[in-house]
Length: 632
Image 1 (tube, rainbow, N blue to C red):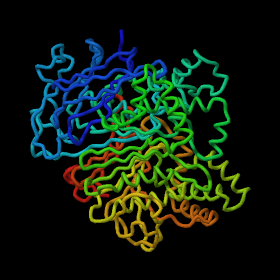
Image 2 (cartoon, rainbow, N blue to C red):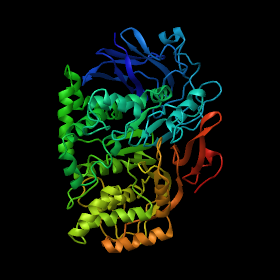
Image 3 (cartoon, helix red, strand yellow):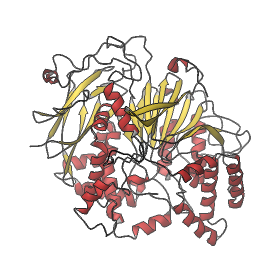
């Protein structure tokens, strides 16, 4: 008899019609999975098979726009979710109002729903909130309540729970969020959760996972205690998503994800020399193929809309095959060998908010004479995704697992190192530069200077012109601390042109490649939040702080002179942070207003709690969000 192994995960919710969503599950055997909603909406999908595992991505249709409805998962006629003994609230799907629609009263579970009969899908009235807004006392949406979008984000979640209950890295922010929301179903929830990389750690396994690895192979042989193949990747997702509170949270809050290095290996695709060395090992090919296969199954599919899924030839081929393993293996091997054949980046729309999630790992060009964060096709796609139809959004979010703007000293060190590796100071310095690059993890946007400059110009363009959004926010993680920084465009400083990159143009200086004093009218910010559950050594904390200091900036300028790197097209200072701890940021976006909160998970006598360490308005009119002005 088939059962539910993992999930359900609520992934995609359609913000254009408010009537469609997708739910991901892993079953124990081949079967047909049904999602049945209390309001009569639902969908079914047969499982597809990969490496002995069975998955389904169910498209749920017929949802009522502007409602919250409970749902259950069935295999055959047997309900497998929620569990019989669940102490958590019902899993729900919340849909936005369709554009121009009139608010209506909706219920989380109707009395006539089959799921309500046994008491598991009932939860009283829906919270009735507009996405991002509070519920009223009667459970209906107030016609005058301001609608909006709440976007929570973070990265770097090492999911292993301590066996003795004493967590050396502190409470898990995702678990703490889930516990708080489960305890208060009427609390304000995120409308979407952005997971910005390192959802699993293939190179840092827990004691429990190592025991499972040791039961199937000799850990004295490479890759040792790291993940070797697809089956072992499934252990990581089991560990990450089986926690009861997290499992419930991911079943109720839609999520968008993108990989970073630890999803495959530390410093993945740092340089051409790094890649040659890894490809020469006997275990690397299976690791990278399995990493991309598992990412496609567990994370990437849920990023796509139903229309995108229908148009995806790999998804069609895997579903059509009795066993999709070889189809997916070929795809993953080709994606590694020729990255231009695959696009992991994607675009999502949340009302008047546009999200462009950028692949900053697999799309790299590593040859030193053409080094780029994004290959030309990927760069053109990102440009079009950002600049197309600018009047359709008030806020632009760009998800980049790696921060665009780092502490100035670290930025200058990476730019200097890139120049050394390119040979600007000769072969001896180039060899030293490569060693330093790997030892110090110098592989962020600044380590790809041309890409940094072009990306900076793209952001300036996006924030300029008559249709400019109110804010352009780059959302990042990776660096195990949180901070806010805002760039400034010095008047008269030369900015790189975009003539060679196909795509839309916007703004008076777009594509000119000449000196430009045109600062953007939108507020442009780097918002970095990491980790969700991890740590950073005290010495590295001190280094990050020093990177913002005046002395650090002076050292950075000296390195820039030595590396002949020239000046960056922008300057920036620290607007907030650094904050260290397990944490999540949330953007609240309503109309052209924006506000930011940062919460940290802290241990207390009553268990882990989320403590607000920052509430800040990002636009002048945000008193409506916080009830008072906290503009930075």
